[in-house]
Every structure is written in C-alpha cells, then in structure tokens.
Length: 267
Image (cartoon, rainbow, N blue to C red; front, side):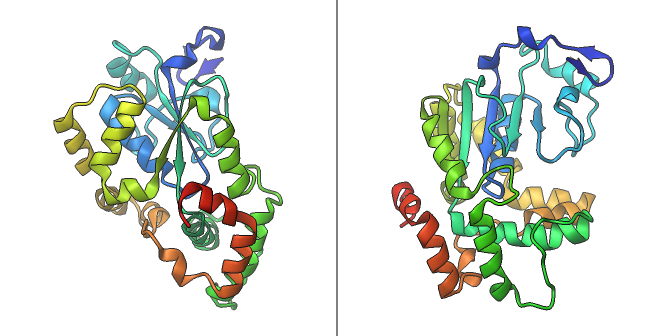
C-alpha cells in the first residue's frame, strides 16, 4: 500500500495489536474519545469517516493540517506506524484493541437528525437519503426520520441496535466506554478506560489532557477555525432527546430498541 507523500507501507507487516480502533455509531462520542487517546498517548489518529481521502493515504491531523511526514518524524521514533483509527464501520476485525463508544440511542438519533438536516445539507452541501422538509416542524418530522433510521434502509452502518449488537458479539476484543459517564466524570472515566486497555496512568497528564480536550474547549477551538466545524459538535448534552421525542416517537423507539436499552442499563 502506498501512503501519501511517497511513504510506503507493506500492510502484511502491520502488527494490528499495536493499533487502537475506536468504533461508534454516529453521534456517540467517538471523536472525543479519539482525541483524548491521541493527546494522552502521543499517537496520530485517522478519522476514516470524516475524510474524503482513501485510507491508503493514512494518518495526518486534518484539523490542524500537520503534514504526515513532519508528524511521523516526531511520533515514530518510539511507536513506528502506530496510530488510532476511528470509524463507524467495523473496518477491520484484525484490530486487537477496539474501543467502542456507547451513548443513549435516543440522544444519538436526535443528534443525528440535526446533523443530517442542518450540517450535512447547509454546511457540507450534501443530500441525505432522508428527504427533509423545512416546512414541517422538527418534532413532527423527527417521527418519520426515526422510523427511517431504525429501519436501516440505505445505511451502510446498519441501525443503532444492530451496530451495538455487533460490537457485543466482539466483546473479547472490545472495551466499552459510555458517553454519559465520560461527560459526567471525564477524568475518572478516562482513567478507567486507560486501565482497561492496559495503558500506564499518569494522573497529572490525564488531568491536563481532559482539560485540554474538554467538549467546551474543543468547541471554542473549532469556532475560531470555522463556524461550520463548530456546528458539527452541537450540544453534546445528556437527555436532550426529550425535546424531540413525541409519544409516538418514544413508542417507535421502544419497539425497536427497548430490550437493548434495558440490557445497557438506560432503562
């Protein structure tokens, strides 16, 4: 495989046990976990789902525009070609260190609604498969959107329930982290995550990284760079689904995901 800027890598020689793979259903906090890990471990990351480039171009910090060669010169002395991949897809089962991000499915789907309705259409100029109508109130339109999303039609990541069930079947290789726990206690939850992935904990460094990579600071950084990027984060609140779910939407969601929500401890 050829990387960008004339860097070559033989994929047969990759030791997949050296790399981390952050998996999530969209809008579940995966980007936050990705950046926390990257900052703490000093490893480059690749957000496979945010980039138009092919995976073969591998690794560069797109947000901060750090060239791959310059960055690799800094990080590969101790960790040659180690990296953190984040994706919504179950990209490669050969990865031995998988971190799966879980968030309340109601908040996930409410967030996804606004991501597709506003961010994708008006900021990215893309056309989602679901046909939004700006003349219909959000709460009313969301009922149909919810049915669409939970049906997994034309959706390469499958629906929220199927996505999590797949991850649970890979439980031997998967460490689960909850968005809600990370939001309520970033420091304690991140330390717990580091223990579970067998990474040595430096509490002072953890504290510094958690402060630097907080949701609020990330939003401030993105706002300075672009209002479009800032919008991508939205609220990141726990329980904001209550503003969107009608009784019909609650019933629809419970019929599809009620048992899983109980299994995960959300009900």
